[in-house]
Image 1 (spheres, one colour):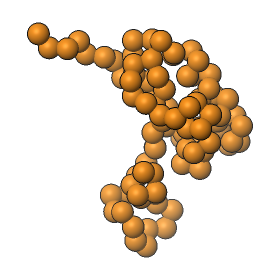
Image 2: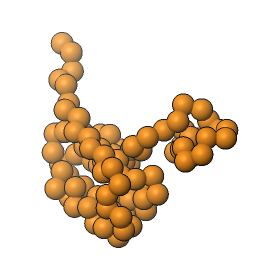
Image 3: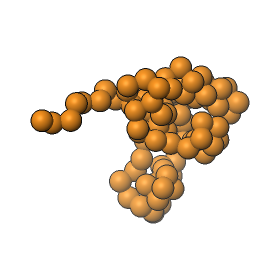
Length: 92
């Protein structure tokens, strides 16, 4: 018998919020409201806030009941002259 499917809910924040503390507070609120739920929840803040948001929520996990952190955009190349882009190596 196959394992039951676990829903995945993900959302990105576009260019909101514009302040680091607001991004952290929003992520902590989502984490607290989804803790223990039988879903996988992922938030994708702007790249500039990824590190502080991940630290505030205790890392990233796509396990049910835990909050995952993801990037909104990523360039396909690992490095190069791509102004304004974020490489997968920067996100690792």
